[in-house]
Length: 433
Picture 1: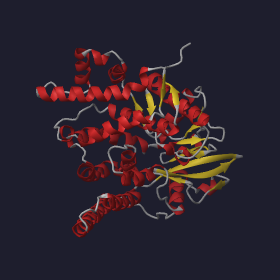
Picture 2: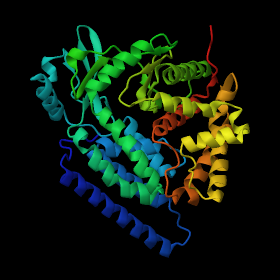
Picture 3: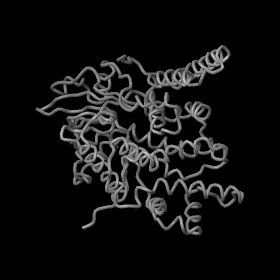
Picture 4: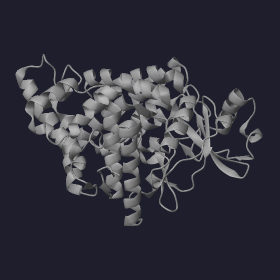
């Protein structure tokens, strides 16, 4: 795998990379239309593959928030053509890594010495590389450790990167400008938090301790003395990333066990801790040899405001959809509809979001839910595709939804998809007593 000796860190360097990427995309479109002239039956699939490759390669060099946005988009199976999903999903756990000299430079900055002077052994090559940082394996005092190192310049480039990603997101992926402007502030806040490993260390130790009672979930121990703003050291959890196992044959009971553990973990965070691990992609979970669920990354955590929590989870009340007045009040509060909407728009969005609420809340309406049910997910994806193509949503001058819902929705969407891939039949009702 190609290693990077330098990441563009200044605004000019990073802007130049975006401009060069835009030029490549333009060339791809010209090539597509040229092929179309020769063969009118030519589809856009080759264009999507070329664009996905060029955008991903460029973002891989930039790393940071730009690559993180690609990772987030890859989790939405309705928003992107398959070529983008497949290429962007590589940002979850297989982005090109930094070279070892840059790793040493980071250690010298924060500890005054290289990793070889701190640990007994330290791999020169990263064993895992994603959007914000990469992981090396180390040993010390007989323990195997995972050492996460943040790419240089990431924290300083979040705001400018997101501004430069905007034209690509709006034009290529048909995103609504009003919603993008509303929600990108939430994305920026979460990404800024992800660049602060001191905060991640604190949250990791707190949330893992408070969640340690959950059956079949394991957490690493963290080491503040070997951590800093840009370096995070924890125990190495033996096993394989969930992404390497999905789609492969492993025992049905193992998928069931892991799926239940995952549901219980998220349910406890959401309803008891009001702080949730908001990045449920396969690269953030390790499956141990005895099929326990290892949680290895608390970089992206959404703290749920109490007022929003009470409002959002009213949507799980099975009687709400039958009470039009109460439903309308909740929809106003969640900004699905607005007081100054035209009457026809209110009717349209009330009906649209009522369908969405019914669909997404269905797993909560019985004691058990079978996430292996292909019909349910076909309905989910079909409705999602309908939403992504709705002219009324794309051209709305208002954001439909509140900012706090962005990462909660993303968390549930990611969770549902993982449970579907695991073919898990989950006890969704909380255990009492």
